[in-house]
Image 1 (cartoon, rainbow, N blue to C red):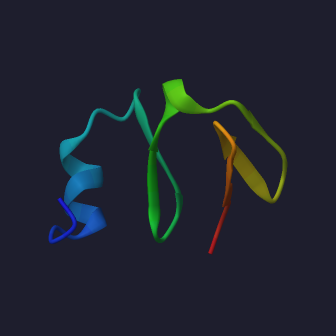
Image 2: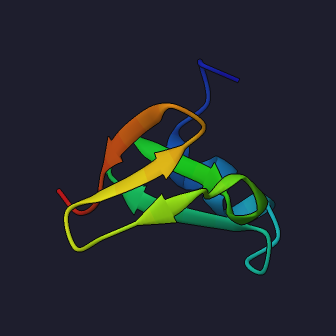
Length: 51
């Protein structure tokens, strides 16, 4: 998967289950633990929103 462009993966994955939050991050909506205007938390990891 790392060799595929994220845009390609974004087009192939179902819109209702995956969300692109940053140019480098495509995440499963089911894994979101919390979020605010700047960050999203998945488990103990914070990922930036936007960019």
